[in-house]
Image (cartoon, rainbow, N blue to C red; front, side, top):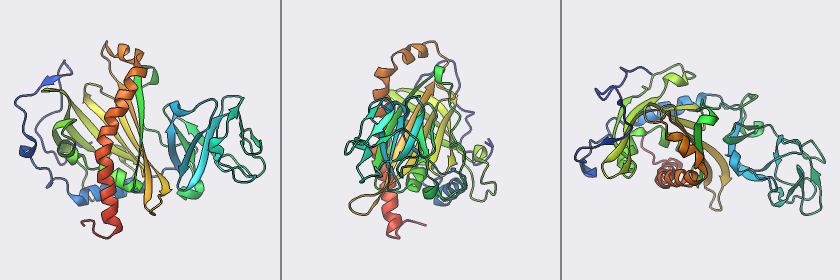
Length: 348
């Protein structure tokens, strides 16, 4: 990031020995500094266009690693295609069509026995290799999320593995995955995340004192330079009352359906929030549906963080609940954007 480009604040970023700060007298919501002049539609649109130009290798996030059970497949629909994922007898990940090649049974309802997926209609057994017209698909488990490669959907040159953002080392991290669905397209979800200016206005229950200190312009030619094409934000996360956690975070888009927020300074430095947008297919009204799969991977060098990892099962529901509250609003933002685009009424 260029620290002098589009700088809107003289602060050098959150610093200090202690992770928490006590705000002065809070500014009332309606008296915040307006951000609409800085949130230029052309800047957001240009960042979105550059993200869409980056390769995905046809990889789509289908769910959380933790949702994969031993006795049932993980079932998802991506771009109208039914998929199932499970582990074979050797523990290897298997993915493929979710429709039985015999008479079309939904394999999502079929059990897994000793690594074999057995169709519950007539007992056709799938062991993860091509059989009776059923062919496996490339699949990848990055330790937090499961990805499936769909070359006929993506239409790009395939990559051997997905573009997985750099994360804190698993032994040092605490992770949780939120999933939600909205009536919109992936680009609407990505555009929401490439608009950091809305944070304190749209989510006053979570963010305060937000300033975008660095933003890309509209004339960049190096579309692949994702590391230099981000939005840097100074923001405080609200805890309780006047108690906040100030950080500097940077938002980047490594592929057309992903936005990553990485904490660069402050408490939890190196932690990431990955937002992945996966197209599902139309709903019963013909509207597109997109799944938001958001991975929160938190880390800290503070002594007490080891205790937090030890009670991870209790903390993960709280982390998912916090993400769900934000996405209740952000999916409304994305759905509204799609609605306006689809009727030719979107500004610009």
